[in-house]
Length: 381
Image 1 (cartoon, one colour):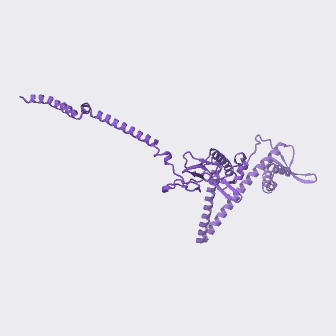
Image 2 (cartoon, helix red, strand yellow):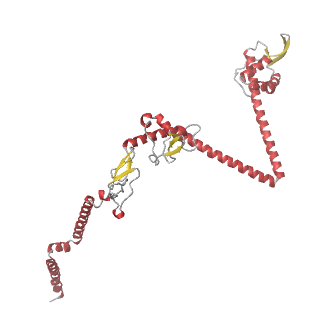
Image 3 (tube, helix red, strand yellow):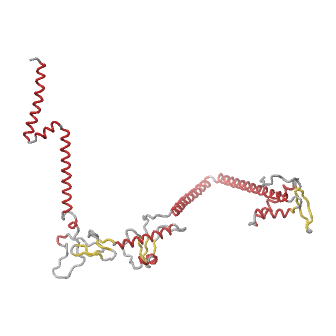
């Protein structure tokens, strides 16, 4: 036969062989349908089997965990330590609990154990925990501790926000707390070990003192926080200035010791410049005072140009107006400022200067003779 017929006959043979082999293989393993699905849809079948395995593993884990939690041998009462009895009995044949095999554990602090269990707590401020392995503060004790904490926070804030706060968080006499809150703390005894974790307790001859630790997060008011921050900033700046001053003095000493002549000349130059600056500043202030006093004098003369004004009266009125509360400043004005004003007025032709005899005394008088000025505001020349 031609080659093209051979190719046509071989194609169905290959397909038949595949189907027949898969059927025979599946039949031999009792899962022809599953294997047929696997050969037809291998990826989908693999994912389906993986999901079944994961679900089965999860169910098995949940089952094992539930059995272990319900089993008395895993957790719960069987895992509780067996406590040694607090007191041994004098009865004949008595054997202490948990002593056999050396599996006993010492009774928790502050507790009373019997029969291998913690049965009670010695202090009324404590009670046996739900797990039965220790003594914990009762609800009323926790409420009392909260009251103490609140009082200490208020007193600490008052101390730290005062003008003279303590360097560290203060401690307060416990007796003061009892007086402040007698309905809660009046009969409440401060036991050792009760507040050790959250408070600072110090015992002295005059009693116990209670305070808050440095790690306690106190919420200070905003104004107090600002003041504390400003104070800390000033302290840092002040310490920096002190350090800088000390360093400058040390460097100056080294420079003077190494170059004495140059240092002396430099020092004299600095002093001379300072003196010149001070003189210039003083001169400027005097000139301003002269201009002000002169303008006030002109205003008084122009207010009543028909009358002659005694110069000393004008001076005293202006001095009292400018310096009503300082006799020293008034004397300084009469000594340093007024003579310059008199000199300026004597050179001003708008003012008539003359001398009159008043009450038997010779007085200098001024009188305004010029036309009234439209602008009579204060002029600082």
